[in-house]
Length: 287
Image 1 (cartoon, rainbow, N blue to C red):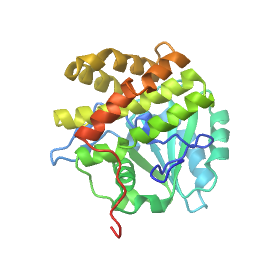
Image 2 (cartoon, rainbow, N blue to C red):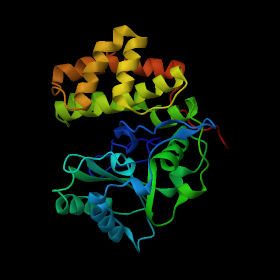
Image 3 (cartoon, helix red, strand yellow):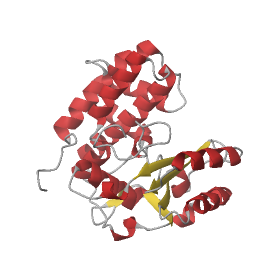
Image 4 (tube, rainbow, N blue to C red):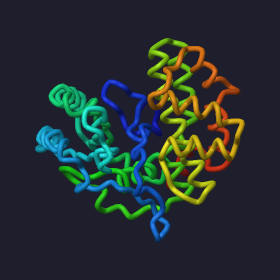
């Protein structure tokens, strides 16, 4: 990550986090457990058999390094589609995830769209910051352990509440500043940037829906539809973001500029999130 509060890094893409992609999309088991904690459908026995070779090779590439390896996303919930889904992996304390991701992506191009490996450091799980809390929520509820030390095994189940929503997506305002910079420098194509903007912003909207409705979801489709009902003036802009995030018409530079403007949809979501849930805050000194 390129700020002190953004722990997870994608090989070759320092601004992209695992949580930005939506840990579970259309997971029918996601919600609130009877005790009020986050519930998801991520389990080892739900991994489709077609992806087992990918995971086996990933484990072989990590074993002996002392690093931890997890799978998350649609593969972990059993919702992945062979040939069109990514295999999303998370490593903790792996020194070089880039070469492993490239090797696995090339080897299994017939089974998945790509093997994406996010990287974190073990010390990023520690502390009272929103970033650390969000990473713990993500690891505990959305990741399935494959090999290496398992810090998730010691984590309690986390309440499905505003603090969890803030930990996962309270950094949207920080992302907005970076997206504006990328747009102005032309460092990323408009369609790729638009997809990134749509994914992350709608995850934050899912947090708004979760807190407003007393539920828990990271489903971008559900989030866009529901918040459009709550605030009809945002229905059309959110539908546009949903198209960018999924398989709708690609965004143009002008489209993205409008979305990222001071009166655009992303700024509106940042303001709503800050007011209703709160943006990331640094821990108190000594805390």
